[in-house]
Length: 145
Ligand code: CUA
Image (cartoon, rainbow, N blue to C red; front, top):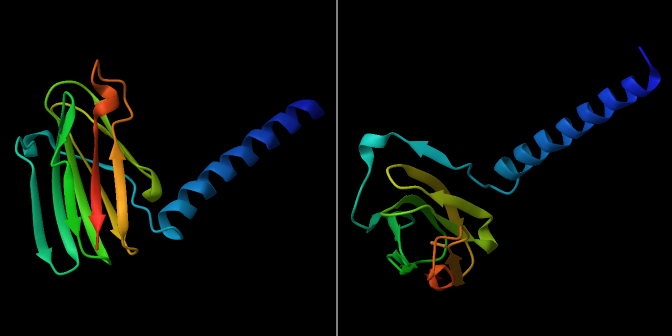
């Protein structure tokens, strides 16, 4: 085999290892959850914030043109939140910058991610998929007290 071929193979192998390490690092060390797709038949149409116990919440978010429902969520510091996300009309996004959360809201499907909020503050979430005229107004906040 040509030495340049070997170098190309080694380089691509190395890059794969870096990507693999990045995924593992984010999911274990930074405690980030990977988004999950849930079965179609569990699709919901109403938003909900359910307190499971003092530090565990379930939030069902419906994205639509051009808002999130609910727009404001209040939880105590130290809470773990399971976000369930769907869309009513077109594809939207759901991005919490400080938490590394980035999901798509797709009509007819549900995406789920779990995140922990240790520090008090206001965490904004925005739609990061261009979804039409009012896209730039699609935002909400999570208030952690
Ligand atoms: Cu919804 Cu952009």
